[in-house]
Length: 183
Image (cartoon, rainbow, N blue to C red; front, side, top):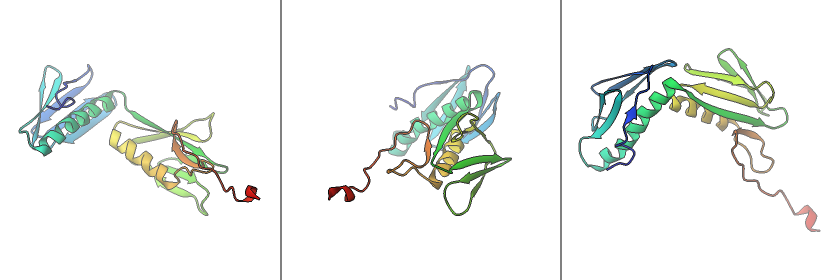
């Protein structure tokens, strides 16, 4: 039995969940999210508690049991609190500017990089710290994927640590050339 899959999901007050067939819809103060679950998994709503069950004990069903439960729990968390990723830009001349629905990045390339901010994502920069910006939204997958795409434009390099990194991420540093001091 899946330890995660058997845990019930409590629906807080102010949030409504509806299950029709394989479609799960959760509405809350921050918005509405939908999820279509696999046919081998079923979800039931009783007394503001969602339970997830599997139809058989095949390997696929077992692997989807806990996953589906966590995806539904993320829908509930998203419509109540939302999700946030914090990114830092480290490097001389590296900048991020938000202009409407565009993220304009100067990352040391010969040209600026423009990214369109997808619907459902809001971004803001920290006024005190020029290199820190926030990616916020109600869909955990969308927030994580967009922040990974932004980080992937210039991942932090191991010698000086320049690039885009998650706040609090530890960059393993390498020693530079030591051949000049060997003489």
